[in-house]
Length: 504
Ligand SMILES: [Zn+2]
Image (cartoon, rainbow, N blue to C red; front, side, top):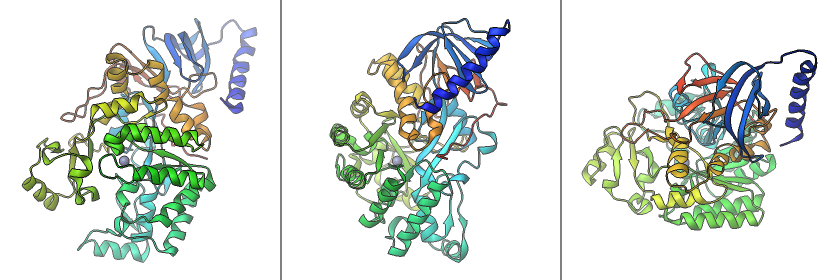
C-alpha cells in the first residue's frame, strides 16, 4: 500500500473521527454488517463490519458500525471486487454477466484498443462496472496498413481514415483487407507504429496489447523489438498472446521472455494453458526461472478447456490439427453445437468465414497445473456478448467457476489464495504505471469500495457451452464505487457507477 492511499485513509478517518468526538452519532453511507472479510493484501480473514463513505472504504472494524443503510452479510464472504485483466466484451450484455460473476473491473488488455479513449463506446454512458483498455497493436496496424480506424477490433466497425481508408473500403468489395495480418511493416511504417504506440500511452492506455499470434506472419523481428522497446521506455507491460507453436512448442514463449529480458520491458503472458497446452508445466517453469533472473513477467489462466475463434482465423489455415492436437470431431460449430467432419469443415470455412467455432483442446490436468502455480492470475477471456442469440464460450462464469470448482469442490486452491489471483495480483500488475489500481483489489481504509459479497458454500458458474447466457450462482452483493449494482443476487438495472480507467 503506498503513501497516497495511506493519506487518503488518514483524511477519511480524521473527517469521520472529529465529528464523532462532538456529535452523538456518525453514520456511514453504507455498512456491510458482520461478513467474513478477506483482504489478500493484509491477510485479514475475520468477521468485520465494512463501512463506506463517498465510494471509498472508511472503516473496517469488529463493529457494530452505524450506517445510514446497513446490509446484513453475515455468513457471506466480503472480498475486493474481482478485476478481470482479459475481457473482450465492452457491451451491456458482457457487463451484465460479468458483474453477476463478481467482476467490478473488466479490462481489455490482450487485444487492446486505439484510440484508447474510444474503447467501450457501447457502455461508457451506462457502465455497470469499470472498464479500460491497453493500446491495441492490432488496431494500430489496421490504421497504418489500411487506413481503417477500428477502436476495438472485436466489437467496433471500421471507419475509413483518409485516402488509404477510402481505397481499402472500395477494394474490400472484392477482397478483404489482409495486409494487417500478412504484410511486414516497412521502416517508415514501423516509425509510424512507434509514434502511435506513444500516442496511445499518452492517452492513458493500460500497457500495450499484442495479439501477436493473429498477426504472426506479418510481424518480423525488428517490429516486435520496437514494441518491446517502447514498453521498456514507457515502463508499461506488453500483454501478449504469444506466437502459437505446435502443441507444447515453447518458441513463442522464449521469444517473449527474451525480448523482455533484452529490453527491460515487463511482459504478461496471456492464457497460459491455451498457448502452452501439453507444455504447460515447462512454460510455468520457464516463467519462474525468468522471474528469478529479474524479468518482470506474469501470467494468467482462464478456467476453461476449449478455445473459440472465427473459423476463418489464420491458425485454421495452418496445420491446426497438429498444432492443437485435435481432430475435426473435437471442434464444434458454436451456433448449433454440431461437431465437424472434413467435408463440413471445408464447406463452412469457404461459405461462412464469419462464424465462430469452439475447439476443445485443453486438458483438465493442464488447467489444474496452471491454477496450482503460485501467482497465476485468474481471467475470463470473455468473448463479445452482443445479443443472447449469438453463441459464445461460457467465460462469463470464470470467477465463480474457480471459487466453486477449484476452491470448494476439489480443494486445489485455498480461498484466500484464489481471491488474491482475482483482486490483488491483477491490481499489482497495473498499479506501477496506473495509480488508480493502488486503490483497487484490496479491502482497506481508503480503498475504492468495489466489493464482491458471495456465499462460499454455493458460489458456482452456471454458463455452459450449450447455454452460455446463465448468470453465476452465489454472488449476493456487488458494489462498484460504493453503489450496489447487485443486491440479493439481483442486478439493479438503474445503477451505472462504472468508470473508464486509464493510466493517467
Ligand atoms: Zn488470446
